[in-house]
Image 1 (cartoon, protein in one colour):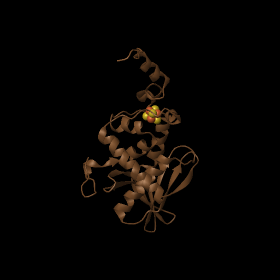
Image 2 (cartoon, rainbow, N blue to C red):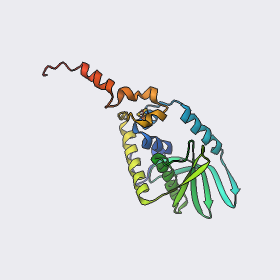
Image 3 (tube, rainbow, N blue to C red):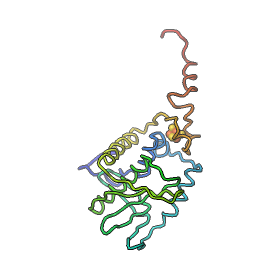
Image 4 (cartoon, protein in one colour):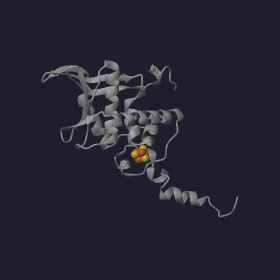
Amino acid sequence: MGERDGLWEDHELVPLSALEHFSYCPRQAALIHVEAVWDENVFTLRGRMVHEAADLPGTELREGLRVERALPLYSRRLGLVGRADVVEFHGEVPYPVDYKHGPRRRREHDDLQLCAQAVCLEEMLGVPVPRGAIFHASSQRRREVEFDAPLRRRLEEAVTALRQLLGQALLPPAVHDARCRHCSLMDACLPGATAPSSRLRRYLAGLWQTGEEP
Ligand code: SF4
């Protein structure tokens, strides 16, 4: 991947979903986007069902707002491509809404992905996008996200780190923490055996130590 005049070309664009996977767990992003591993669990199935409800392309007028569904997005500056579940237009100002399963709660990877959608809309439409919302399907409630400078900075950092990861095609170590309980890639990842802190890994390493000086 290279950068020309600060803009990325079509074949260099990275999916928005990779950014979400990366900000959840870098190893998850590498397994899916480098090693092409994918598996479903109850959380991915719920997520897919929620997205399918919002994934039918179309335009409607709702309470005086124009609402676009499954809107294609790109940013040549960040090198991202994907689509937005829903974009409401409050006058001329786009307001992205991303659908997530589960109850209303703040999660950094949700906020980064939504902020990335906002940056795409800003580049495509030439207008500022100051905020959007996550719609939490279980609680049927929205959580508004403000795209402030710290969130935008974290987005830029995450995109840079994601590009490095994809460019090097390396598999980062397993995080082996609470995130793994919700991850569909447990069987492919084996976090209990591959994490640097895992007891099994330390045990296996110990098998090769003879106590003799080399
Ligand atoms: S099982 Fe854990 S370490 Fe492995 S990809 Fe999923 S979240 Fe990351």
